[in-house]
Length: 114
Length: 110
Image (tube, rainbow over all chains, first blue to last red; front, side, top):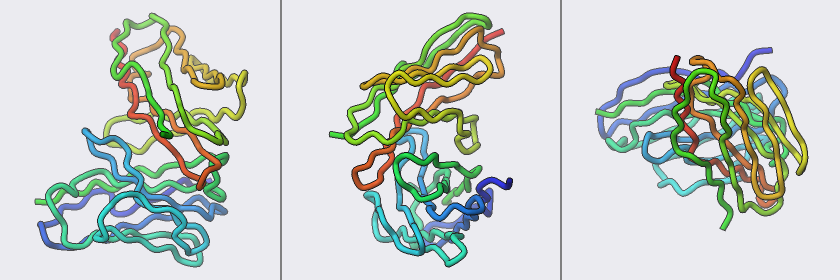
């Protein structure tokens, strides 16, 4: 059974540009959530999607957005990149996103903003 | 305030020296408690899910236990390959949110 797949794995962007990251959840999983991980801040929740609807949102500026497609695949977009956006972006999927179902993570997308 | 606290932040062990990592939580409406292992530069790898106080799960040298306010990850006779950061998360029925601890970085020396 394939795990959570994230693309690209590594990317370098210039300040002011925008970036789109992609996530394919485990087959059958309908909830996809996104996290930002930095050495100093740990795992920070960005947002969670279920059946193409954003159900939960963390405390990030509007430059961070996402969406989910009918096949449960998800994308997140960061516009007007800042140096502080450099981080590991993790996608996680679960059956329905309720607190009792395990969430499984992808390998992450390493974003470096220069 | 709902939060998850892991201790210690870092732990250095000699190979074969057993120890425990702690995850304490003040999250209402616990639905599940999850343990993950994360290697540098990689996504967290799922280890265990615990649902109720008194529950225990084992996998190789790892054993996770749960009480009403905390969970322990016991590592028996660790090996260098057990070196990683171990993350704890709590899933809540309130707003279906997950709360993550900041992790314990384990270093096992040969």
